[in-house]
Image (cartoon, rainbow, N blue to C red):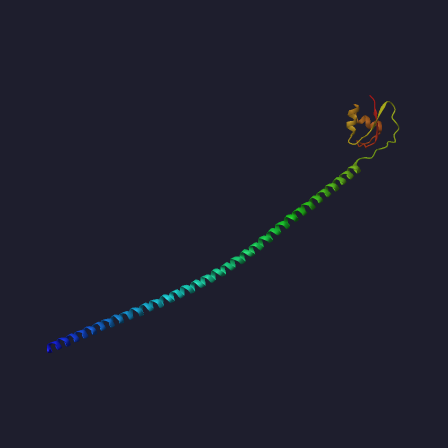
Length: 189
């Protein structure tokens, strides 16, 4: 029975030693697991900080984008206002150009009318008046000719086939100047 007891005690000591060894092994595993958990918690903390930094950067970028969109909207609005102003100026310039052209046309027409009147007045003033000769009616046969606008002494002489000097002598003319309405005596030949 002593053997049994020895065997039983030995068995109990072995079980106990095995249990201690298992507990120690489990403690080592637990310590190792705790170490792994701590390392994982540290990794999670680092990742959280990185995520927080990325979120902060993202928020700053979104603010910049929002600010840029606001600036773009402002520039577009100003651009539209300037385009409207340019369109209004172009319309005003076109209107003023038409008004100036109309005024210029009126001035040209007025100047042309006044020039025509002045030329006609000068032409009337420069045309010799009908000259009344005080010389007696020449002796002999002659034609009576009333001078019309545009006629010259040489043209009349050719028409009647006489010389200019014959007409001048017959009518006692001192020059070749004759006037509209003047009566000339043309000698018959």
